[in-house]
Amino acid sequence: MKQNETRKRLRRAMHWICERGMHLLFLLCGIVSVAFVLFISVYLIISGIPAIREIGLVPFLFGTTWAPTAKTVEPSYGILPFLLTSVYGTAGACLLGVPIGILTAVFLAKVAPPKAAAVIRSAVQLLAGIPSVVYGLVGMIVLVPAIQRTFHLASGACLLAAIVVLTIMILPSIINVSETALRAVPREYEEGSLALGATEIETYFRVSLHAASSGVATSVVLGAGRAIGEAMAIIMVSGNVPNLPSLFGSVRFLTTAIASEMSYASVGSLQRQALFSIGLVLFLFILLINAFLNLVVKRRTN
Image (tube, rainbow, N blue to C red):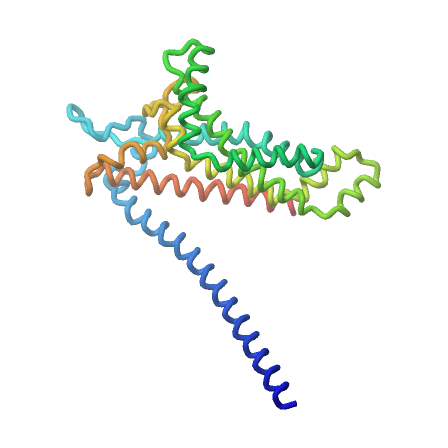
């Protein structure tokens, strides 16, 4: 009896130690995640503020000329073309990609036969695993010449090509997360809607999609984040020229401005500091989009 009691106490002690250890491990992972975000935020602020102070906030954000290496005239550090291009490119990609992604997710989660859904789901997962440089390479070889021939342009490397490439790239994030959210909707919601006389399509869009709105919004945030942060693919199809954005004109995004100039910007120079300031603006831009979408979701759920 004493041995059995001793074993039980030992098991309880081991169980308690394991539970406390797992709690501490989860807490440590959460602290590390928050610490990384804080570190990135503080580093970008420290690195980006000096250039903004020297250039001026208004000339930096609303200046239309980016010429940091100009010799005959005074260098200019206006990022308005990059900022507007990123806004238009991300908005265009979301405008095309979000409806397609959500409709595909509804089809896979609720309508498609199991075999067809398995094939399409595998294709979407494969699409998510393709490196961004491959998207850019295919876009440069196939999409850019097609746009040039279709619209009779001098060059097909333009904002339209970047929007199309970004649309394709954000589809896997939107489809996968939205489908998971739709599958998590309790079946009782749909059965109640059908019992009240709604059709299946009405139920899917008015009940299931509404119940999964939080997950769908998360998918949109992930897709928008990838569209904003992409550089390698769009640098190959957008022309990478610091012009004000036009649909058929060569443009440069915030990310491509950093990627194309950081390698040769001198350490400690105003140009390099301005590139860090662009990174700070990009970081704040993503935070604003996340806050806006979360606000929209909260209003809809309330």
